[in-house]
Length: 89
Image (cartoon, rainbow, N blue to C red; front, side):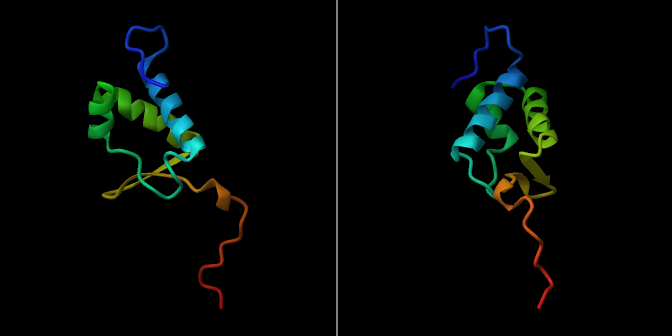
């Protein structure tokens, strides 16, 4: 899947779809960072606002989480519903 710069679908939506597919396929694995904004801009020839909007969509969907000064990471959805055991014992 590539970004179609001439197509009718908004570029941010195309990038969100691409990243979502990479997350679902495991190409972007849980608990690992996605490429930086700068790298996504270079890879897909997109502007910063377009990349930020796409990442924001996936963050709103619960697929990504941004950690200040660390980056944006794929959420580990396999842990949903599993009790938090930290601090027990």
